[in-house]
Image (cartoon, rainbow, N blue to C red; front, side, top):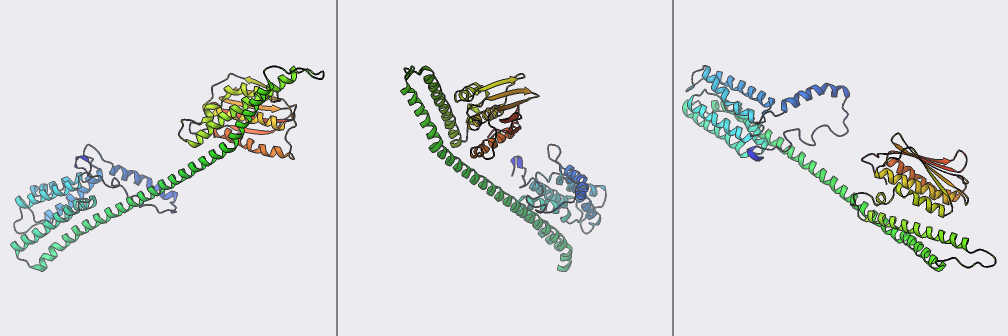
Length: 454
């Protein structure tokens, strides 16, 4: 029972959940198009209006009941019946007026109709059957779950009517049965139909609830498995890559410590200053790069273990603001890098900024690995038409189908393509027009709101 005495049906008096078009059925387009006006009219008739939630379909049902009652009024002559005049017609119509409120107060409508019928029989009656008036309220009460009232009120009228008619007319059992059995059958059918529809709706609601619960359990199981897999990956990364990066950092720092703060003395006629400076620069680059990679790795591991951060750790750590340091590290590693910007720089979304940095990082790493010892890299960043165009070229040996090392870079190329696609961009990689290798990516300045970089 809803607040204010209103009854809340299981499904808002709509069709029972789960009862409708069978799975796999094909609806013809012609039938669907033809049924749309009818569906709109049905929805309009079933829409509640006003503070009492009166629907046009309830008004129509009330008019039908009034018509049935008026037929009973016309034929309701007999002992004790009042005169057939305008007052008899008016009182017969008044009996059915509470039915317009059947949507929100099914029990109240049944009680109100039964009370009005009692006064009608007591003060100014025609010999009418209670079935035309009570059949619809009885059905609504049974549908709403008020089975005691739905059975007791019609049964009381039938029993009292049998007693009064038998007492006043003495027409016999057969005549009484012929007069009362149709009304009893109609009211009994209304009670049974209301109970049946209610049970079907309850069953449909229970089935829908079980299906929803099963779906939630499947989603929870899937989330649990994903969380376990994330933890397993985090452990593997920590035990392999993170430990290796930490070892590299410590060894580079130890080598710098053994090298000392100043240049070594020249021996055998060779100058020591250039050798020391180059070695110290290389070791410093190794230490700083491994430290940065270890920091990012720890952030990634934390993201894998705790999937509740506002944004991925990689997006907080990597962006185009780190491009100068990346270029310096690659140059120190032996591949000079030049960087040019065309157009007016525009702020990128966090996802696009992170994707751009990772694409540049992977491209320059491939230059170090595959372009050859004397290769140089050139980066061009072009801002135009609401997008950032990235172009990374080198003058190295270019791609080689027989190079086994280049096969491993396919994962890097796939990752770059996935990062570009994740923010709604484009990616291409292949042999450069003048030799070497070329990576081209185009990323929108504002990434789609529902997409984040992997």
